[in-house]
Amino acid sequence: MVFTAALLVMSPWTAWFGGAAALQGDSRLADIGPAPETVLVEARTEQPFRLADLQSEGKAALVSFVYTTCNGSCPATTHTMYRVQEELKRVGLWGDRVALVSISLDPKTDRPEILSRYSEIFGADPSGWHFLTGDPKQVAEVIASWDMWARIGPSGTLDHPSRIFLVDPNGRQREIYNLQFLDPESVVSDIRLVIEETPAGAR
Amino acid sequence: MRLRIALPCVQVVRTLAIVLIASVAGAETCLSPYVTRLDRPEKYLYVFCVDADAADNDFIITIDVDQTSPNYGTILHQLDLGSKGNETHHWGFTDDRTRIWAGGLFSSRIWIIDVATDPAAPRIETVLEDVTGQTGLSGPHTYYALPGRMLLTFLGAADGGLPAGMAEFTNDGRFIRRIDQPEESPYGYDVAVKTEFNRMVSSAFTPLRNYGKPFPEMSLSDFGNQLIVWDFKEREPIQVVEAGLAPLEVRWSLKPENNYGFTNCALDNSIYLFKGLGDGTYETRKVADTAALPADLRQSPDDRFLYVSCFGGDEIQQWDVSDPENLVLTSTVVPCVQPNMMHLTGDGKRMYVTNSLLSTLDRSGNFCVRLVRIGPDGMKVDPFFDVDLTKFPTGAARGHDMLIN
Image 1: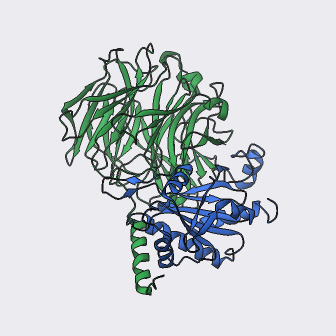
Image 2: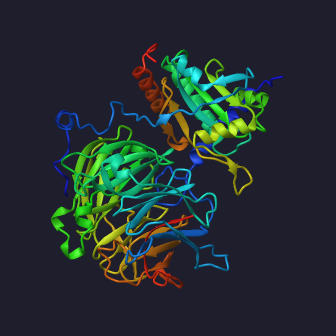
Image 3: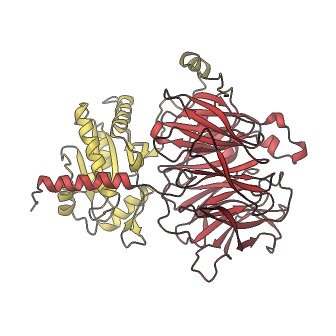
């Protein structure tokens, strides 16, 4: 058996790595880039919603893309977001420092009242989870600005990528999750990190 | 008016959601777990081609592999990449399978190819000309999809020496960050992630200063023999383990509960097992002796078999890995001289094969694409599928990596 002796124990590893840390920058979560400008209609209130307003309130955001008639990954995505919501409540982070946002991929169908009903089915807490729709052209522009897409697939239903975005209180994308491997506890750990990196009032 | 939703309805929806989470899986192997899998038989086979004498531009061909098509087994399209001498080599899909990232080992040039607009006729979306300037690295090799991003391995530093490293980019080509390797393990090659254990393993080859030379001039002392185990979430190395010389492909077991994988050691003519010890660390062990120069390693969708192309031994071997510590050779086949890259279909029944490794290492000019059919009695060469890569208007082409769509 060739088990190398090169196991790197923690203290020498830290010293050995020192300033030549594995990552450029201080955080384990990279700065992926700015969150795109997102101005749509909040389904429950039917009022304009601007993602950047969350940053001015010092909030991180977890952003998903779904549509209400999807019988593919969307129900699982929204249920997973619900689990994140509940985990945030359990650890006391729900409230002032984080919001969940779900953007419709099918605004022609997902009119505000339909999207609002969908949010209720999934137990979304309106105090911190916003479902967005709007004029189809504007929604399409927002979807494309996140490098997302939705188009009719071979089965006749909308096909789309499975991505959920973490945006820090400075409006920077810090992580992108795939539904299949998304663990709510890990997401909440990431949310906590980006909040702690951006103290309230420091933006 | 808002509807009142009864609790049982909520429960049904949530149950459905849980089922959907559990059912999101695919059978196509040797891709990042984040890549969307094909949900139908393949129609197109893309082959990344090097103009053999480097006198003309490199290109990508699309071969019709729709078994119901009258054009089955013929070249449908050729995409000129606009430059020559790149040593076009490996590539990979983005997570949503709409783009292929493809790179040149000599030029460090990277093409982002749109395969969504017209899958039969890929088109260049972007060419990244200054990846080395952005990353300080050269020789981009593995293109590994992460959600919304690409993780790339590089074989060396900007000057063509060491250390190797990794870097992340957005899917549309914006540089995000560089990831440095431990000083004591400076060689790089492949990378693969095991999300269930939050582990990533990278392997080792040789940098441009060595692979860019003709084979007789290459230095065997300038190849790596180590695997690096990383904390994936942190992108931080936690352990270096030894394998045979030039451990190339990294293949984690496909079963979520299995904390082990394999690598083919090209200059040790062997397969090594890397296996988790349950405490987050890993050990390695040689588990098979192969024929000469095992250059590529592929997995069957049921996780039962490994396929090893022996570039120097002119054969492909099928190993039963049901017991990962005791591999059993179950079938061999000779599809062509110097077989190298393989690509297995999602049903595990068809394997496409090319036969160029590097322009500095190829010993035959009979470049082709062949098909190996796989059944209960092992592997058989399909005598009717034989795409000749020697008769392009520009002469012969070295076909290397492949993807299906």
